[in-house]
Length: 333
Image: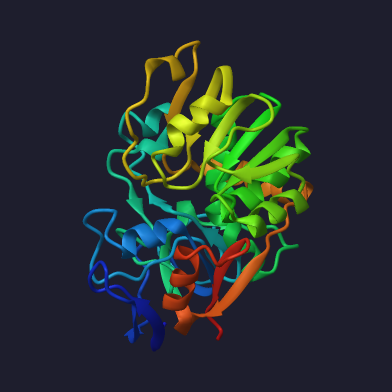
């Protein structure tokens, strides 16, 4: 396809994105060209833009929660047809041959490439993606409401899988991921305890509206011990706080790609078979399972929509905690 597109481009970490007109990219043999309809704004985008994740491709079009229509397919593409609406996540390509890929752990691929980090992402009217990492989306979600499913939903779902089956689940940081995950957890009969920034009464009210049995500041203990806690806030000091909150044998899952340093803490917090673990990326199996599950719950996303040209404002709103649910860029505006 010939022509030009609008894009928001990062030229150096710490600088605002620039609005640019660029040629529409051409798909490679195993890639598809996508007409982007919406792209959710993720905290990982902030880590990239703010320079907390090293060595991004530059210049870079950020964005990895893409909802788009396939408009052109490469010569070697199988199973993806023009006209299909798809979602594209953070994990953009894996080698399929390293020891992690062949053992069902492609999320840890030694050679993985990531959307909106090492390859251009969805803060643009068009994007290219590898056909193996494009997923058909449930029809009953609009474009802007489907976009948060592609990272907030997927990473939250993988975090839940790694947290075990305990009934009492704590969620630290009640943003895009937590507002999706609480719906899945309640569907599975789990009781959710929500932790926000101290004094964030609006965030705590939002959590209770979505069914949290308790909501409070991250600086206090819940009214009863937890079986597991998932940390979405990128604050290392929450790790010992969560360890204090979980019961013997409890699991603390760190759900972000970046976190400030974890402070030292006494071994007694870890003793009695408590576990601290991280979540890295996702697998295609995670994506396919979650996109079947979401409409059956049904998961409903709350979004604040920004025009593509206001990507910097969306990032600022997310950074300052001013987004209820998820921020989403509408590329038609």
